[in-house]
Structures are given as C-alpha cells and as structure tokens.
Image 1: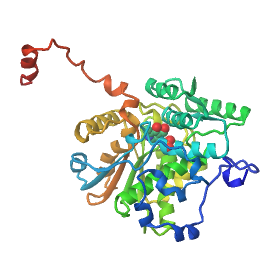
Image 2 (image 1 turned 90 degrees about the horizontal axis):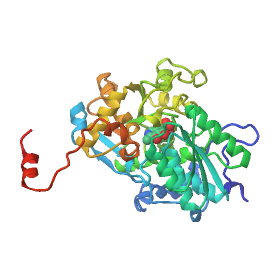
Image 3 (image 1 turned 30 degrees about the vertical axis):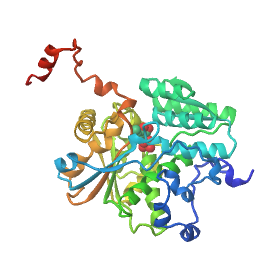
Image 4 (image 1 turned 180 degrees about the horizontal axis):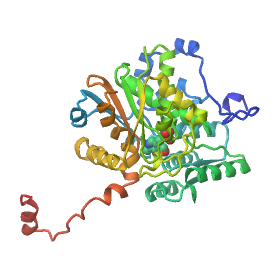
Length: 400
Ligand SMILES: Cc1ncc(COP(=O)(O)O)c(C=O)c1O
C-alpha cells in the first residue's frame, strides 16, 4: 500500500502525535474562492485540503455547510450588532463530531482498516458509529458510565459495540487505548493526540464560516473547549485559508469552559505553558462534552488561543441551562448543555469589554438538544392531558 493511503495516527519512530500539512504553493495553482463556491454544499467541497487520496474512499452522509444565521434577539440583547450562530446541530448525527468522523472513517476505509475504537463523552462515539456503519467497519465505543442515554442509544442503533467505563474520560481513554493496541485497530478518539484526522475534519468549520461570510473573516469565533480539538481545528482551518491567500487574517478565538471543569481556561489565565497544565481535580458540570479533566489537545489549543489574541472565560451550569433555554425560545435552536457553552460565555466577554459591539462574532452551537434532553426536560412542567372538546379549548385559551 502506498504511504499516502495509510492511516497513521502516531509517528512509528518517535511515538509522538502526527501533524498533517499541505503543499500550499501547489494548492494555490488549483483552488480559489470561485472553485469552492461552485461545488456542492458539503464539507467535501474542500477536498484538496483533506487527507484522503481518492474520492472513491469518501464515506459521507451529506455532512457540512451547516447554517450560519444572524441572531434575532440574542445579539441585540447583549448589545452585539453582528452576532451569528454556526448551527452544528444540523449535522447528520446532531453534533459537530460528524466532521471528525467523515474524515477519520474515510481514511480508515482508504487504509483497509476492519475495526476502529473510540473513547468519547458520547457525541464522538455516535458520529464514529454512524460513519463506521455506513462504511461496514466495526466500531468499539467506550463512554463514561454516566453518559446520557440518548447518546448511547444512538451509538448502539448504528451497531457499535458500546461499553460504559468507570473513571470518567481517563477510564474510557485507557480502555480504547488497550483494546486498540491489542488488536492493532486505530484509536479514532477526537483529539489530535490520538487521531490527527479528527482535527482535519473539524477545521472545515472555519472554511465554511469564512466562505459563508463572503470570505470576510469574523472578528471573533467563540468556542467550547473540552480537549481543545475544536478550537485547534478552527485555528488550523483559518490558517490554511491564510496560507492560500483566501483570507487576509485570522479571527480572535474565545475559549469557553464550564466553571466546574476549567483546566484550559485556568491555564490561559495563569499564563501556564502547555506542559504545566494539570488535570482538573473533580470535574463537575452538566455539559458532558466539555467535562475533560485534562485538555488532551492543550499543546495545539493553548498556543492557538494566545496567538489569536483571544481570551478564555468560564460559565456556571445555571448560565449554560439559561442559555440553552433562551436559544430554543428566542432563536429556535434546541441545543444540548454542551452545545450552549460557547454562547453562555458571550455575556462575560461583552461585560469584560473583550468583544466590542461593532465586531462580527460567530458562536458555535455544537450539539443538538435531542442528544441530552434530560437536564432541560427536568425543569419543565408536565403538559396537561385533556378530553378534546369545548371545555378544554376554553380552559386552554384563558388568559394566564
Ligand atoms: C457537543 C460538543 N461540543 C463541544 C465539545 C468539545 O470539543 P473538544 O473536546 O474538541 O474541545 C464536545 C466534545 O465532545 C461536544 O460533544
């Protein structure tokens, strides 16, 4: 098999994480804004910037080109004139991890892999399981013992072999690593330290944001951080476009973490080097997708955040839930708690005067509310059950 077809997750000689790079000088001759603009609206329109050698190997469910919508109430309410929501709930399995999965599973197919393993809080697992199903590849999934039932059902429905593991992310990572090693199956967990193809998929969000804004770069992109893969991915994506001369600068990034699990925001504030970052003692937040006690991609994400001139803030679980409710009621988008984390950080960013009212701001809604409805549902009253008829109509229409 030619080397370019092989799935290589870590360097065979030194064992360190692989980084994938492109020959920008060559690519500049073949792609431009017009070429991208003329293609079908999936993330594969950027195929020259993705590490798959043959389009015949692409495993797709029509992912990408998610809506970028101007807010109706949220922006004005915060005093922001140009606030956009990048609605990643619209990806095939309901979270932005589908970007990672389409690229990772395509590469697995290209290299003839028969099975894959993944450690995940739930969304990465569902995504890999769906694309593995589509490709006819076996998928072994390891999730924390308290992962939301809906996410597990989703992975199991796709035919993945799902195992709940005690000990949080550390436990699931250990299991995925051990099973993968024993059988020689690639670990497709969505952190660059395990799987460089995940970041390659994730970076396409940045391409889409730039193209959807008419190749104008926003001033800010506001992102949730668990492992840091999403953030590092956006930075890499804008970096590719800059190298190709398709944009003239990169945006500032804002990292938002839950106050109950904030090793990354803490490291940023204390000006720590990535090597000085320690696991968070007792991760405690309802936002399972960012409950990573250690930000596995800190080596990429922390320098990216600093180089962008950006900042980091934390939000409480109450702020996350309030934001999720507001997004549903006022903007018509139903997100899971993790999907509301970035947007929940906006108030602080405006109050701190990090973000100015005239700046163009994009906040990423990363996961659908259907993934983890228990938290928001538990706060709702039981809807009434009625006998159909005049009396029920009168009662329903009574002024409150
Ligand atoms: C919905 C959602 N948003 C955000 C994240 C955080 O992404 P990352 O771990 O790459 O920082 C996750 C991770 O699982 C997620 O599921």
